[in-house]
Image 1 (tube, one colour):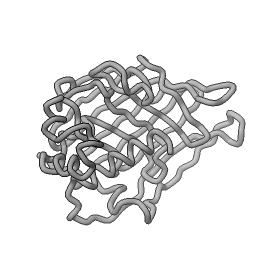
Image 2 (cartoon, rainbow, N blue to C red):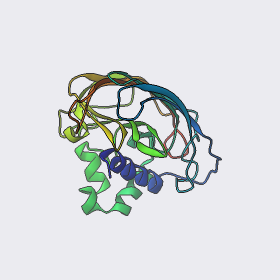
Image 3 (cartoon, one colour):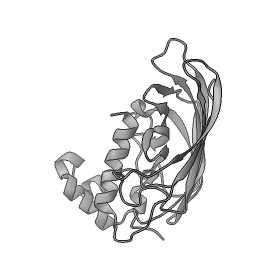
Length: 249
């Protein structure tokens, strides 16, 4: 399982455990516009695909909220994807109630969580995460761009509200400095990239109890190939506090 898939699987499980899911909603498809290489050459063709929600996905996982995001890639690889908000798009302790966070610790277990709810909060650490944004295809989670905060980041480092945070590396650099973010971009299992540390930032223009909006951008280099491509990744997003979050304003 890729790092992105693992992170999203853990966070989605925690959201489902913690958040109410009593309301029901149908799913709609998101659109993805991609410039992809033809065969093994650098020739690019433009295709338009519709990402349908798989029957195995959580109910209402895709296209359920008033939100969307767009990934634009330039440099040695050019593509654009746009995805509707899904259960995977955004996670934050700030958008979950105390009761749900306590239930999450109880369900997962204090030994696995590293302490009780009160101990975790007193340490300044997140129960689940203070912020994770994923502009990704809900049916193929490796396709997209993800950003989250480093392990050293505490609640005092990242309050809700407008702010700018530097990107210190990729997801394998999660032990980086406090108050910085780590990011990842990939196209497929056959086209993976490594984030170039210090090459970008996360800009939040709005973050309150109803909505989060902003952008993040960084440079990345293709991995596990003889002639790696270098790209610049730019993501814009606007996500609503939806039924998977229980502390909405």
